[in-house]
Image 1: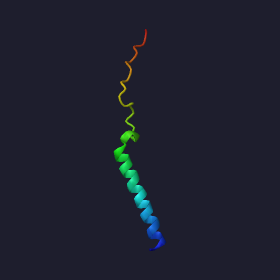
Image 2: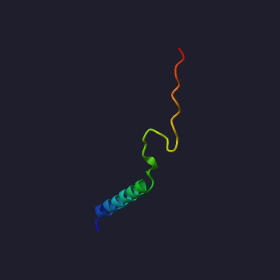
Image 3: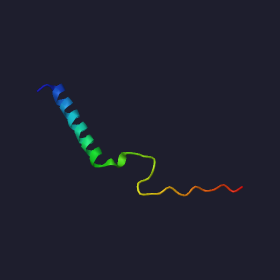
Image 4: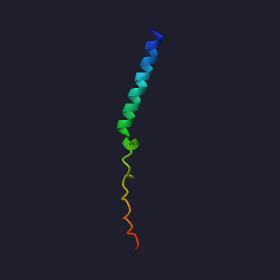
Length: 47
């Protein structure tokens, strides 16, 4: 086999592993809110 074929095959395999891991573990997605936490009540300013 060609050296370039082996390198590209390894890179495609690594990309597949990362894709499966990101689908199985979606905690890396940042929505701006913590999961399971409510945002605190807004504090009314004292006038």
